[in-house]
Length: 146
Image 1 (cartoon, one colour):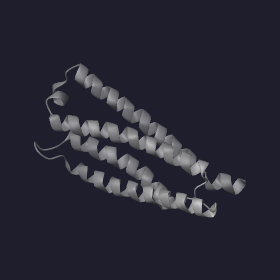
Image 2 (cartoon, rainbow, N blue to C red):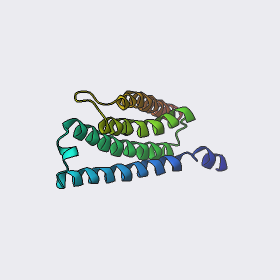
Image 3 (cartoon, rainbow, N blue to C red):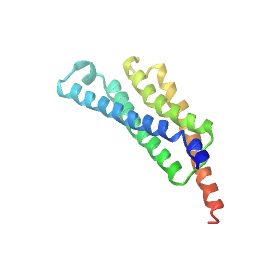
Image 4 (tube, helix red, strand yellow):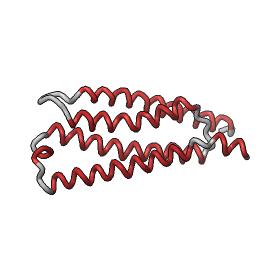
């Protein structure tokens, strides 16, 4: 029992990060609604900025949910996920919305800023972690004889 508790000790930080991400990016979405409501020109007159900020809000919120779901799956199925994919998932959840957000702050007329390169890196990290979760679930089914 003690080793189970120790081996699943990574769940709480993942849950905390997931819920914190949801809270933060939902507040950011509320801020965006306020910018629209008060008709702030720096936001309304820059279509690229609006799109990138919306992508940051959406991805940050949904990826926060992914962390929560991943932690709950790992707990319910007692999945053994090695540290590297867990760290990759947590890092990807931070980097993807951050890349959209930073690209929206400063960009040229036609292209997003250099920070947009954080997005594909984050996507690869998240995909790798998702594959690790799939493999752990398949291993779980094999061990149960299903």
